[in-house]
Length: 248
Length: 263
Image (tube, rainbow over all chains, first blue to last red):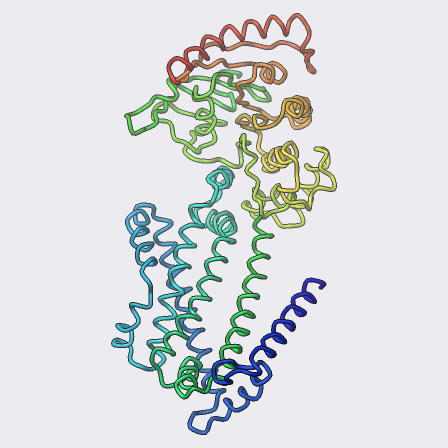
């Protein structure tokens, strides 16, 4: 509780300093925190755009779709490669190499394939979210202590039971870490996709505001996204801590 | 009828090789052994003499290349959790399970209901000095406690046979002595047939009815020594001193061979 109070105090102090410094300067470049709520209200009713709630909802749907696809594909490929060692040996270096390539270079081709609409954003969010999940599953499988598997087998556990009662719990914390990283990257993927080229979504509105030098509105949107991402990641961190406590 | 075939553990000319990068290495060669009901037999030998491999084969975790292993009249082809329970040097407790749930693991696999699992597990933990620790996780327990939980987990299966692979090897000397005393008591109350692996002369002498001295790689039976002394054994008695000297001669030879050959 004390920590939270301190954090709030530091945040308030930073905002106050920011306000004081920005006040006499050019309001387009130096945005005062006190101007943000008004800017957000204006943004919510820009006459040329569909209502903000539609953009937010669209982006939310894109992120969820991209993330669910990334989870499904990531878990599937991770377990297929991880449980068959020969396959894993062949493909894991390839995956790691692909992961090392800055993913944004794939985006133009995704736009060619999937068009300007939500599909290309989902594809990009999927691509970014997918890698950390696969790699976490592979790492998790390697971390399962052989001794625990031996104990279970000696007590008559069949492969399916070993998987459920030994492997999954033993790799849980690594997997949750990967799922959390995957979510953060799926969010990045969708937003970057929208900023780089779209006709709707929060990223598009950011780009729109920025293009018209509506910097206050732009800053307000960025803050909203930051708050949303922090909230999601905070929930992820809590979940991860819980799983870690449980899985030792 | 008390022929050799009625022995609960029977090994006939059992051999095992391991494939390594530099070719096949014989680990165990033509080991024959019959352990009688309620007998405590120890396999004693230097590291790498294949004694753990023998235990893994009896436990059904490793398949012999030649020879047969028969438990209670049945040929072993895989784990037989209704007859044989194993304890390893590393306690190997599941870190995400409490002591109680670790002990209940094998029963869970057999479909025993939770209430009954709890009852059996508590019944094992309490006499082991683990009353009040049943809800603790392995990381909250000391090394000796963890090993006792691991032994309780094996005992929970209720098998007539217990295989123990250097179960106290990772513990400090004092704990190890106490655990040995404790195991003598467990054995008396549970009347199990126990096959124990160690490289400690002291442990072998304190615990065993018979000691099987094994040769260094490949592991063969070098000599079988009967220990006809009452429990608890006084480690300062002249009989124990004689036995220790005799065993040390045998083990020393093999340890030297292992040092020259292996390292």
